[in-house]
Length: 219
Image (tube, rainbow, N blue to C red; front, side, top):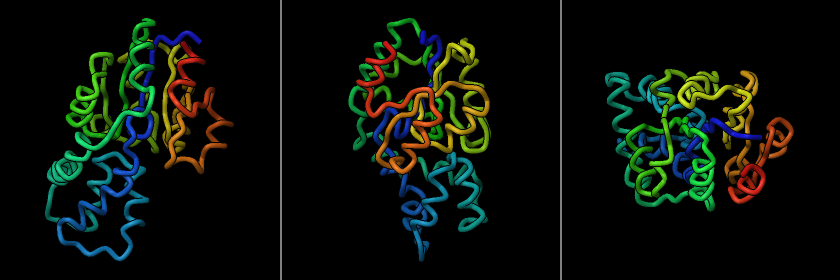
């Protein structure tokens, strides 16, 4: 297909960051002196949420006297060093983004990660300039698992329609609402989503194990 608008998830799709996010919530809570009997249970819930949503969860469970906004700031600070200094793009991601931009497509990031961190990490890896827009779950007010609203708004930012747009995602919980809303989706393999590989293959228009495969198929 000729892609006029490309909507990219960040974590687990372009950036090899799911291991960090998999434990971000429990790390933050325990770092503030709260003892957790089952940290993995908290993380399993939080990893499917946008930052504001799981900040609200942490407020309700652990920090009732704090604002959601203050907890979001604390979460951002908790992961900032790792996000900016220890994570790398997935192999071939930069080349794919650059080549897709050269083809004339408009590119947008649609992510649950905080805007400031996303901007910094993409600048660090030298691909920020290829993106025409960025939108976050926090700004939209809903998580990807609950609705396709973030993708609808990202689509408008690219100026494309659903026939000429393609979403790149690694998470089945985000892919399902997108498909229901009529989007075309390319599933991207990530080790943290390996158990949903077959489901993604069955439902997505494309499924790629790496960005070189995506380049060969689409460009």
